[in-house]
Image (cartoon, rainbow, N blue to C red):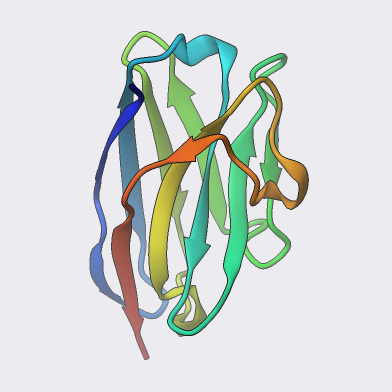
Length: 123
């Protein structure tokens, strides 16, 4: 069974930064594409970022491109999301997720995901 431990969310003012972390267990971490999607209040799922398992190339959603950076530590089975220049519209529950073997289409389709962590950006 795949399990995720997500951390790093919270409340931040617009323009601030946060770093999310997610440690996954129960899978061959390096073989999976791993990323984040989010769901804002009353909104559908939105792809945020994903790291390809084959070449480690990052993919970003258009709304976060240039502000967010995804990285991973295969030894520690951990993926990170550094979020800079945060905006109120970034407010959402952020979910860590994996897909085998590639990043899902539109960065929203994954095999399995964590419960999520709240990020709130105040104006």
